[in-house]
Amino acid sequence: MTLDPTATRAEDLNALVGILSNAVNIITAEYAKEDHVVPSLDSTEPGPFDAPENMSAVLSNAVRTVEAACAQLSFAVASPGHVMTNKSYGYYEPSALLVVCNAKVADILLSKPDGMHISEIAKASGLDQGKLGRIIRMLVTKHCFREVKPDVFANNRLSIKLLSTDPVSGLVAHMADEVQKGAAFFNEALSDPKSSHSSLVTDTSFARAHGCAVFDYYESPEGKKRLDRFSQAMVGWGAVTGKSNLSKAYPWSACRPGTTVCDVGGGNGHVTLDLVRSMPQLKIIVQDTPSVMEQAKELWGKDKSDFVHSNSVRFEAIDFLKDAPVASCDFYYLRHVLHDWPDSECLKILQNIRKAVQLSSKLLLRMSSCLEVATLRSYLAIQMNSFCNMPFEAAGLKSEYANSSWSNFGNSSSGNCRNRRAIETTLVSRFSNVDAMLPHELKAIFVVFDSFGPSQVKRQTHSSKVDQNFQAADQELATDQGKKVDIANIQGAIAKASKGCHPSFHRSHLNLCKPRDFLYHHRLIEAHTDLQFADNIHSKGVVIER
Image (tube, rainbow, N blue to C red; front, side, top):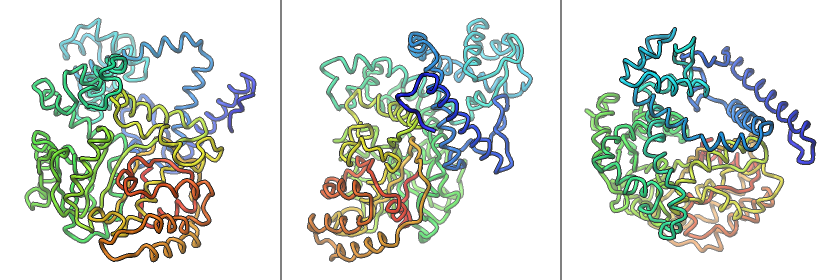
């Protein structure tokens, strides 16, 4: 069911209710398939699909639809002034979350499933009873914690994520503390002529609030107090977005024993630690700042001491803006790194990796893309895209994930948005196994995406004709190692390989064959494409993580 822009208001509301009802039916059916029911908000037990990697695409899409439909429905019936006033008060919620995280309220309530009186909670936390009670009650109205009877509070499905042992609590506190303080200066950073058009990390709203750029902040005396929490926040982000997906995003089982994976800017290495749980034949090198490397040693020493003792993991400090990572690794992994830096710094990071690679090396990028979807589901996609881009755009940082990049890939106003996918990077990956494509650089590039905009189409069997075209293109592009390939030949090969694909794909990709585009493949986010072509690429081992 879709919304008709010419429909009456009543029809709009009924359509929204229909969309919502249909999505709820899908959710309950997906749970029933696994002999589960949708968890109650009052429960503190983990649900079967809490980890995003455990959710099917059908379930994920339905959940996003519910979020979007509920939001639009409430905004549609409430007065505009009421809605906008509520939005302006939105800062209170993260502020309240920071209080209960720092006071460890969820920990205090952990052994009290029937609830605890606010006087006891306040005593255990050392905070004022009246103020803390109002803060918790406000969160109860947001369905975080529950009030079992007046002034008696207990944990629930949401508040249990605020346990100090849960990395998500670190993420929540990180965002509610130093990040929210930085966001408070967003307007000043934009309106000041000195910083408004700057791409320097020292001209961001965060730097204005804290006196230095974000990563310098965590090396300062004040920032070091929060460094452990920042590392925990990155683990929490992995839990929220699906850190285990890395093990599924590449055929690691085919790698020879001793294959080296360099986790560049990998924090404490929690993602590659999760990878080696299922792929112990790999050797891991984690690289980040010296202080973070100390945290990495502690984490791996506790959770994977056998890897540490067998020298199957190394920890090497690096300034990836100045230094090349460890040379000649089989894989270089960049997870949510490039979005933190302006283009000039991204280029330095990639150039330093180029210095380290061998011809057989592969670069794996994990980034966030926002797919344009012509339905209500785009609500969350746009919301998340804005969340990811807004703090950086204030400083002139990465905004290529927003609408600015879409116009490069065919007719953005086409009604065929259901076929819009994060596919351009796979096109680059598909042809980059030709050594001459990137002389002295990477032999193959595999790109992994977090996609906040769900695909609305069912996968189809890939076309054997397109597959044959690719094989022919490979043969035509095959050249002696190190020999430069003429750009016109690459364009011709792509044209041949894309025969049978959607016409807009064929038109919009012939101008992408510039060496700079292969280096800046992280910019190439969206394209109209034929599903058969997408599945053909997927079958070749190039994975878009959804």
